[in-house]
Length: 497
Image (cartoon, rainbow, N blue to C red):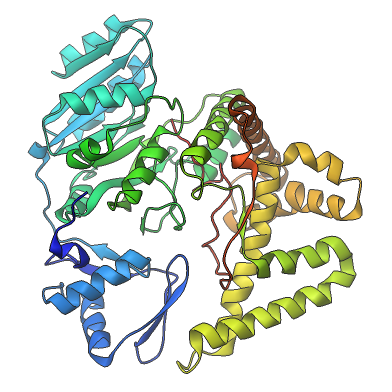
């Protein structure tokens, strides 16, 4: 990717808004946030520019545009594009489909009902058992049909589709999603930034479910990246976005060679990570929500999660620094190892380690800026708790077969209780889903065990353990919400369909 001289500047007319987790000092000259967390100290002039941007004044001067780009690149802020961007006439919708004429018909009906819609429509049929049913729908909706006699997977179908399109923007939509009102324009607006390769909406299970399966899918779908916008990258809060609904710049697709057809699962994660590595940016825009059909049964959900798990090892080999079941700072590891190994006797050492971490963070990030020690303590404690939950999640989703061996020791039994009971209950308390804690815990264990089985299946097939290895990160202060969740976590699974 050849970036223009203005790549370091936010486009003219863009605004910004600070991330919900960003903390600002009283004088507005110090910002703490982003992922990984950092401190940005502003000059008096830059603080005035930031105040204007936060009050809706669009960036026009080079200084304001440079400041806006810097804050958005670090995750401290998010871009607010002006109305406009590419016209729907510059967009082709590509729908990969295999054996799902009912879902395809529902999607096509939703596209027709919610205008404006992309001007072009390509259906990429991938070896369906009844290709005639797909062809009939293509004729009915005046869509171009691209067919493969034998199924080669969604990556190949999407590649066939975008290569047949002649527009600058390609909107990938799976046949099991449906769009709503005004879904296209807010996503297209981001393409006014020439560095943006792709933009994704929020993908959610249908609203108001009544059964336990529907409620669990609504609250913990691995396709749902949450309600906060973000820049997408492996070590950011939003690590990936699914191609179930994804707009991509054709130039970027050509630059990257499209989807990797050797990957039957996780091909979308791979493409997004390659785009970021090549210098493009990818945005997540949750103000737009598309619905994704639930699995029809618990067995189908387990099969889906198993399939997701099989992608972990191939992705880990292609992106060795982007995927690990657990990433933790030495401070977080030491703080949790003390009570795990020592029980009650480890509580005091853990408290001492946390106190030292608070002091180090205060000196490193907040010294001289007037940030109250209580705020620094809140940041560190939040990070420590996030690290502890990450360990428990990693145990379920990557190391479950080893838990039985570890349970022979007292520390292993504590780890088992934390991973299998305490963390799911903590998640239930945080989310308050409309099902009871026992059902929630059972559903979580089913989902994670299926995913873990897929991870080990992929590792055995590849004869590699890259996806099973934890990683210690640099000596950074722990920050709540920035530690990458284990593969398969809601808003953290490295595989979609």
